[in-house]
Length: 362
Image (cartoon, rainbow, N blue to C red; front, side):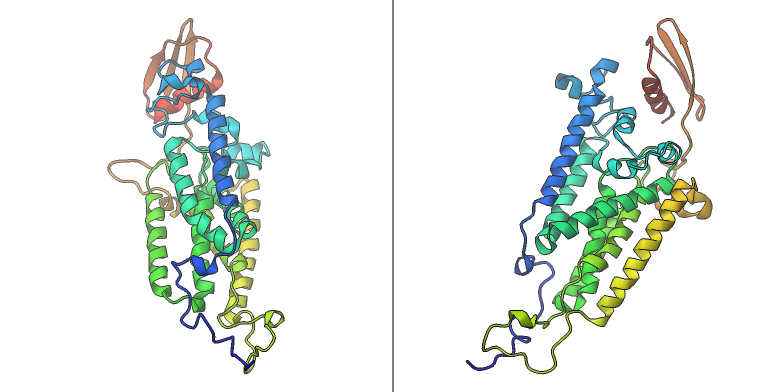
């Protein structure tokens, strides 16, 4: 058989970034498993919440103990903040002062409501399945979890008076990994510029939504940056034309000097990303457990998560109320806005009092 230059065969024009089929190697199962885990934990949170046991005006009461908190308290159709806190929401005070560092992980499996859950899970399926089919469950699973962890660290450093839940930091990590994968494997794609513009536009729109109030954009940013760096480490492809000599069939020959598996810039990006990841996570964790407030080191960073307008405020103050209990009445006065309300409740638990206080103050 005559010699054939297999380094120049086949994919001479590169691979379309938007066509996953030529590079599909694995079936996707870890992403659907992540989705299932999030859904199951939301159902568990609603079971623990048991709204009808505490109040009468629950939403969709025919669901029984799975009915939702009043929309004034939680407009996303979900449990109370105290239930989420009990289930493992990110709470700066408990992470730092009560040594509950596990909340940095558990918070990414909890969601504030059905709307929140659907938005994150649809995004996860859309982004994650494609990546898992191309790169396998190990690499994508690691990127998802570490990105979520990174988002939690940044969130805890800058948002210290409210709890936070959601998988959006981890999902943004996968978006970041898609971008770095395109950059580090730039030479193998045929429509790279169109892909780059599309990805940047999607990322910009999603980050822009994060400047609205009550959206934890620090988790988004932390997850995105983590995933972006992790993509340079885990999603490097061999350069176009590289051939593993052990897989060359008999009668085939590689002409000329064989190409190295990766280009020099890929090695450089890999090393820089790894160093930045190690330094970033180390510094972030040290600052967090030392009790540092990120806002004191960056006076303008709060604008990354919320931009105040005439329609809303971005104040991040500790919510507290003065309370008094007389017979069958509970009186609460919000210390931040001065509002007072009387509730026809007796023997109210501290968790329920806190929920009513949050509702009154916000």
